[in-house]
Length: 533
Image (cartoon, rainbow, N blue to C red; front, side):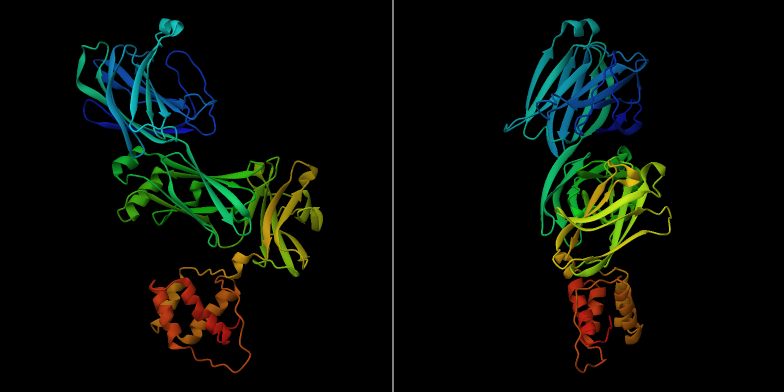
């Protein structure tokens, strides 16, 4: 897949904008097809036509891999065509200025007898950009007028994908001596998929690899926070109205292995430069046996919203995280027919304790509606079956399927929730990994931001001690506020709240101390039985 961003300067100074995602390919004279290979750009698109001495002409820009069986070198072709007949003009002089991401490549004039140029961007360890021109003479191509000029652009990392900018100015057409009084200018940006791989050494799930596929520009500064399950990275982006008007979408993808249980969540939220985007931009594709692909399609409307609400800054800073603090994992069966959505209680499952699993069976082809089907449910660790149950799932939207069992005292680490033989189809199966005695959850802190207001009102005397304690106590019991395990004293205690705790609350509300320091005050209240949990 590729993305073409097009800005066209007409003779009268007016500008037209076109920015599309396309998998189609349109030939100049004879139709042909190129198959999309591993997400690299394949296809073409034509600019809106402009007048050239009474003739409607346009520029066609195409992108593909040069030789996909051998390398990832990119090929971009441009041609000046008669918009009505789709035949290329003769004796065209192109002035082409090109850059790859933030790297300037070249600015040079090229003459083409048939109005057709092919640029091969070839990765080589050269100290500077090298340009080699050659003519591609072919007998049949000559008969059809399809022989073309090939220009090899050689330099470091040119096959990495990313954003290629081509500013094309037409100096002559239909004769090298016919210099245009007002040259035609076309500004194109072709974004070719670029994949970066990031290894994460997870304390529970082991070595995992997340791939980021960007269809706009190169990403940098990838980080994964194991405790919060947040992914962050950055990417160049010009925050100007001119650039936003040229950009229909910014498309990013995460490829997550299905062995990475923490990220098999049912939904994600994306923030760009601190602005939360609509959940509608997210699509999760679970129709792969070993991975899930999460698409983030940021529309021009979303870009405009970010522009209007952010402080001036360069680039895009992405933050991606599960869209709910509640545990809810999701997976699709091998045959692609059913989606399983799972949650459980308690959040931190422990050996030698009761576990309650809630799950829904959703029919993917019936608009994600719960459906009543036969199922086999097994909890396994390696080859050991810990628990199994068979039944018929509910088709109710209000009620969940419930499984209760006791986790043996010798079970710890990763176990799998296996759903098999749905609707008596042995291909309708899937597994979801969860963790028993998860060490990450032992000291987990989760406090919604809106509680800062309550803490500030308490510190400022707008609510009394009893109201604040009752409120925090309720939030802990309802698991809205999640704190590390805290033991309570058994001796004599006082109900008086020390002043330092109220000071901490004020500083935390003002952002002067972190969550961990504020929680120490809450733990003191629990330990001294001022807060009862």
